[in-house]
Length: 80
Image (tube, rainbow, N blue to C red):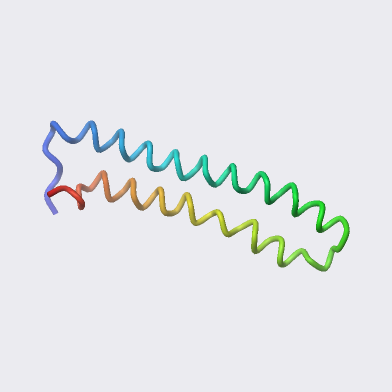
């Protein structure tokens, strides 16, 4: 795999940072609402802990996707 030309390297680093930050911010926003609601559910019905944990973990895929996209941008895989 060839590296990006130097004139694109700075833009690729900026794009990768935005992709990763967007994934992290989206995950935090999603988990804040889910966590607050989940604590209320667990307070009422402790046996629902497994379901609440499952729904709390689902948004973690957002930062994983952002991280993978950032790596793709830095490696120049999408560069024509």
